[in-house]
Image (tube, rainbow over all chains, first blue to last red; front, side, top):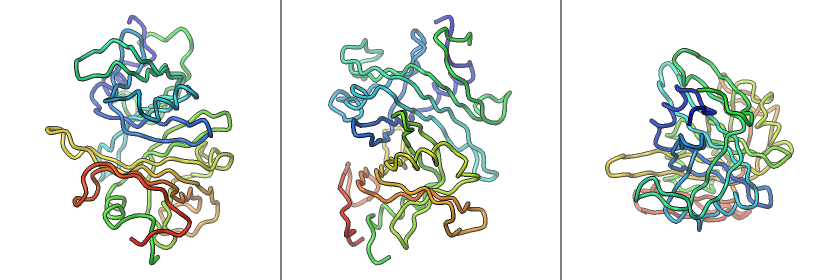
Length: 142
Length: 142
């Protein structure tokens, strides 16, 4: 897409990381938190979560009843001195059952996250520290 | 403590890992997901989250209004072949403001997680695969 809710540095980071952790909320208000594989969808500007038999999981059912999710992708760059970096993406998710597969190993069931707030820290070498911003309906230019 | 909600292998894993990701839920049902340092409290059988100025954070305030949290501690052991391990701890948390510090670098503000359900995968070399169990009021012997 011509515009993206993510910066170039954030997209590079999201593409390089293998897993994130996805928080979803059950109808009774109880959260769960699961490691997931993630794919930046450059056509839609979303983060897509695929997975084996994803439609049968509780996180998929959670999204059907409460579409609010929070995905965090982060890692420890150095222990001594302590240095961390990452991105938290809060957003509204769709639980899709017939999505197009990007590869044969991916499921047709997808949790597709539309970012509403992005908080990143130390992901862009040009900017240290934490930065948070809301994502408006017209995405900003990457 | 004589009894623990965690197995010996789980305690060793939790102690060795530096960070986990904590999901909390705001009053409007919106989750957030944050990397946190964690400490197994062997006196109480809880997981304690400390942090710099923790009492001023939204996750601390979230716990004050919705005590349900989910902490996931996991890592990628091998990429080729793909091998992962971890523990998800769903529980009820207290947001404490005057807790005893275990070291000078820790805050007196603590999010203390009492496990209610523990799901672990590939953490115990003696057992492969995923195992989930509820934690009853009388903790099982470790």
